[in-house]
Length: 250
Image (cartoon, rainbow, N blue to C red; front, side, top):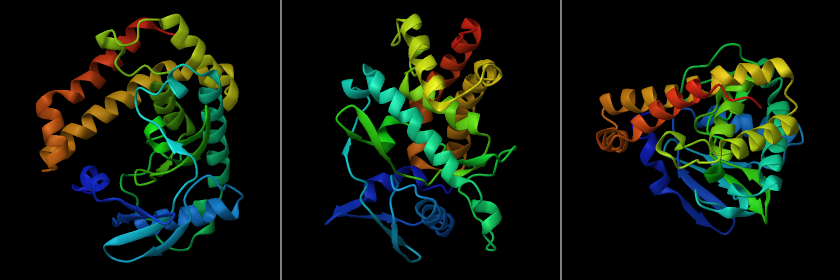
């Protein structure tokens, strides 16, 4: 991912149902992905409208946006269930993308193996749109890349249940968190072996985020440098360690 990726949100403009954002070297690939999704019947993501060397223009995804303290998803079974359905629907719509393209793909981060789907890699409430308690849209595909579906599911559960902040005591009811995790797994359609695997994948995914932040800070990304100096990355490392120690089941 480019060093200026973290500051791109400050440069987004929304007008007349269109979103204008800075373009990255990965944007042509993302635009092809978005067109592929729509061709496969997935209409809950932006439609690409135009792209040049500096800007991209996409349609605005319908629905209202959320924040990290919005009760619509933090306390709603409908939200977490519809989020899982949406992620599953998205993953299914990505099938065949790599095989159907003759152009070389450029992703913001290296592809992961096995490349079962095109992972969104940031499937969280802040990148979703809502109709009341139901998740109806998905945006910000800058971090997308091929990878295993559980990589996306793991981060989704961490953000949507949520488990984020569990090591600091911000998640106090682990039984409730496991129940919501089970709801997500049920709605997505994970089998017993996949659920067992998530016990390791969730902390691995969260640790990877912390290491990525440090890596980008070392490369000169000002936003990540500030985050790391503040110790934000340590939260993810502590959460990952806590989740390993608990051996949660869902």
